[in-house]
Length: 458
Picture 1: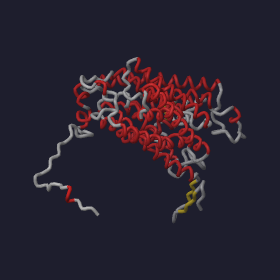
Picture 2 (picture 1 turned 60 degrees about the vertical axis):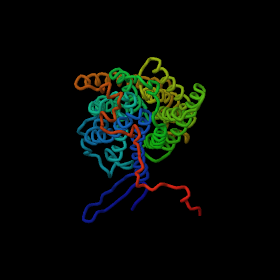
Picture 3 (picture 1 turned 90 degrees about the vertical axis):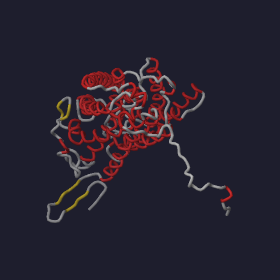
Picture 4 (picture 1 turned 180 degrees about the vertical axis):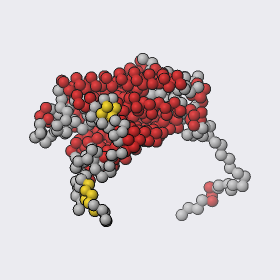
């Protein structure tokens, strides 16, 4: 017998095994897991298009390697550190070590309904994969590959894991009443403010003597557009899947993501058009990412009109922060802090005042409530969201700064200046994205000459 919510099977010669799972939600979450995984290659294209043609492979490598290294870490111990039995700062590493006690046939911790525990663990792992990769845009051209591997592993343990546990794993912030639907705090603030801290260690990029004005120009705008498309597509799994079930909350989260991203795209484009006289594709793409990042902490808790407000707020907030960092001379190459850090920060605060009203806390909540029984707007809730956002920003900055200083003491993080100017693709990885200068192709004397009169019209 198979239904949408449960499945029973009897294996020959064995006792009956009952799997009480929501099969519709399981199928939905499998798709969402794949969508979030797609976001990391999308990020590689987005960042790769924004840097110079001599560093595109280095930038893409830093994203793709996260898919391998972080996934191994997650399945061995990372998931248990985040979602295991609470030990205040971390989860118990023995609770789900190497995916022990994580079943593909029942939800985490047993019980009926829901999605398999193994699927939940894998889905959460996709968030861990992309988070350290987000930081790479800030220190583009200034991080050697070997110390980068050491950095992301230790950073996961000392920054990502504690915040994931405190907010999503039943830690003290969750108990206090802080809400983060899909990673405004856990993903975007941690990555954005850690990226800001990295600038204090790696410093500025060396300015080439020739073509200095081209240092910040994207080398491949179509790559940027492709990366944006993949990220936006994956964001439906990122935000929609954070409902952990196929239902009204997932629908609201996905639609709210579309609204906020679209509004921010348009407003950012208008700002650029007014300032520079021409609408640009790169600004359009960055605006869309800003809107999606900002709505992330609130996507499954707000009404569509609130997503529209967040889209507008994201454009002005993130755009202003990107301009502010230029005023301060910070070489955040791809504006990770302005877009992701401050986007997540802004969205976390706005959640406290844009969430559904107090009528949605009741058991018999009105039908319009997006996620009854969770967060509702109030001054107290805004204060909790603000406190958590500030705490996360300060914590991420300070701990990352100390970590990078320690790593730099043991091994140099920043490449040699001549390697940076020549291009890290060749110096670090021995590969080049393009053949520069272009190869000269010659026609052999034996090649017959093409004659126009040899073409036969039909």
